[in-house]
Each structure stands twice: as structure tokens, then as C-alpha cells.
Length: 276
Image 1: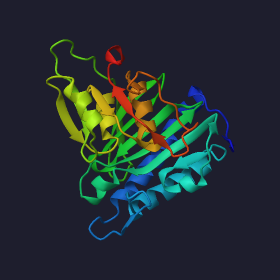
Image 2: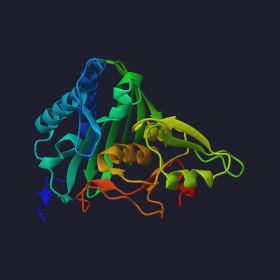
Image 3: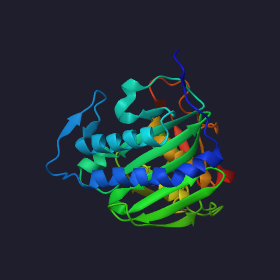
Image 4: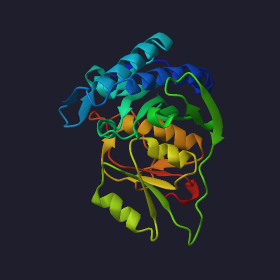
């Protein structure tokens, strides 16, 4: 198997990249909201999911920006998987230029731009922008997470620290972030095992943002999804004090062995003390 190798980026080096990466995500976000949804062209990919000119515009901006900013670090993007080769060694970027394309096509506002930096198989830095909501969640593991208010052109931003919330304890209701567009029996059974759980229906990686800022307790997805859907949220939630595991409590790894780019399952926990 061919190994894709780039330099290992540590926490200090990643911290220096946070602002320019946020600028890049803001540029991609502005390109997405500039697309007129009522007249845009929508195509179907081989897996049946939609792709639009907004996906491709955002991907182009991010690809060109990363090449200029960190030319020796490999990039795995949803829209360019044909250029990717597992396993990845040291550091690489995982990119979903438009997460929640179905939400975008349907005219809803819960779509995001996701960029994550993975080092040694673990998400270290993550940025999630929700352009139509004017929000950005970003985090660097070991240094905390922030929520930014951002104008649609991305030129004005203000940040505040965020943290996951402790679970309210016995008798307290679980607030569960659930997908607006994807459901499965295993996830529903998991939620039903928590009597009184309150479901928050949300699209795209916005669910991770709500966990990170303390607006929800848990986000279970016990059916397959792609690495680029999870990695940025993984970093943001972890940096905010939460944890991400599989259903057995094991940590997730990225860029190593799954040639189909799938994450079989995951659970995002706001309070690590109740994980498992």
C-alpha cells in the first residue's frame, strides 16, 4: 500500500495556522453564499449524493489556499478522493468543502465548511463554519475552542471561548443532537435507552458545534459516515472538553486503514465522565 507522507505538525505549529486557516474557511464560505441556489446546477455523484457548483467553488478555494499556506502537507478532500492514497503518515488535512449539501439544496441554513488537521491519526485542529448562520466553531486540542460570529463576507469576526457542559446527572434530560436528513435504527435505539431525551434536529457538522458550546449533551451516529464529515467536529468537541468514541468507547483514528474513507460509527460526548 502506498504511504502518503508529509511533515508532522505539532500543537505550536498548528496554533500559528489557526488564523490563516480561518481566513481560508471564511473565503470558501463567502463563495458558497454567493451561489444562487434557485438556479444552480446540481449533479449526482457515484454514491448518490449531490454535488453543486458551491461545493466545487469552496473546494477550489481551500485547495489553492492550503497549497500556498502549507504546500508539503497532504490534503484529503471529499471532492478529490481520486487524488488520495491511504495510509497517511504524520500530518494531513481532511476537508469537506460543503457539508450538508442536501440541506443547502433544500434551501436550509444548516450547511458547513469543515477543515481539520490530523496528526498521527488524531484530529488536532478543527474549523467548522456555518456561513448562513454567521457562525464558526474552531478548536485546537489542548488549547480550547471558540465560537466566532462572522459576517457572510467573512471579513468581520468576534470570538468567545466555549466549553462543553457537564451532564445534568440522574433525572436530568439528555439533549441529543440528531441528523435532520439521516436516521438509522441503531441510533434511535441508543437514544431511546435514555428516557426523556430531548432531540435537537440539526443538519451537517452544526451538531458538533452545539455539543462544543454546551447546547447539547451527545451526538450519536451509529451508522457509517465519512472521515471528512467527522474530523473537524472531533477536534472542536475534544478541544472544548468533550470526547468522541465508537459505541464500545474506543477512540477513532483517521487516514490510516479505511480505503473507503468511512467511519463505521461514532458518539460525540459533551461530558467525558458519562461516555461509554
